[in-house]
Image (cartoon, rainbow, N blue to C red; front, side, top):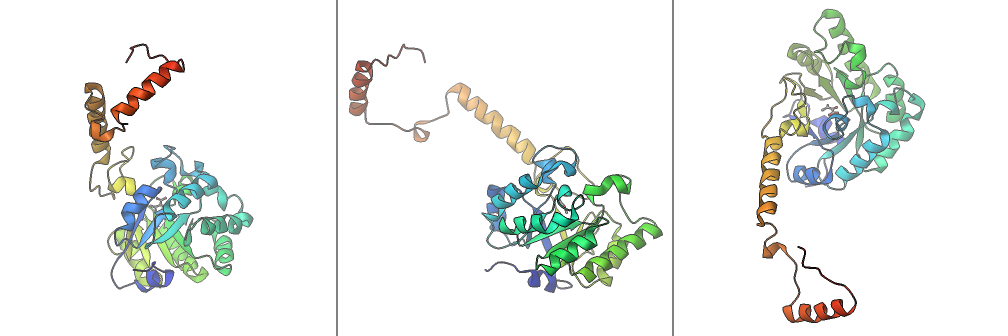
Length: 288
Ligand code: KIV
């Protein structure tokens, strides 16, 4: 199986669902690489679930780049999208191309840009420079403070119209897909039917062309906030706690490490070495 392309993602609209999960490191990426997942997103949710920060605005470009490299080192199949973090375009639209190219050099196939007043300017620059862009509208966590907080968006006529217009603008700018976050399913269905590029929903109901969730939510590892739209398929947090308890017990009781988990040398070699160590002045004092 070859690597999934932007064209294949676009062609999926109306023909089966697109699947996308976030990922932040090599080992989880390796596990995802063994699946049929379409898109891996190095989301700026890294700030919350990996770095423990409350605000996604606090994750730096270098942190995002390092984790992008870790993920792209393992992914051979899925399309890899990297989130452009807050300071890389809202604060300095002129530098956006410079930062986006860094993500592509780090191995990403595309970048994701959340809606912001300067994002049309930024996106057209990236698209002109052949950098594939995924848009993100509805609840945009980097600017949630301007949207009344972490709330469902598009519940009234005015805000629904704004989101619809944003979707149309993104399409005209040439994005290859749009994330719709936290909007009523009726609006996401309406937008999905109205535009030509695939929509990928998170808290946007089942009528989107695909679905995305945060990996640490899906495996039940991140518990600080569990949004209504999350489906946790496991409880990795509890599992990790139980495993750590078993490790502690085994170490304290002397059950770990066992001989098969231990290196050794032949006893006659050790005897010789023991004499040599003593002669060299290395004294063991019977304290274990
Ligand atoms: O940062 C993130 O995790 C996202 C979502 C769409 C899942 O942007």
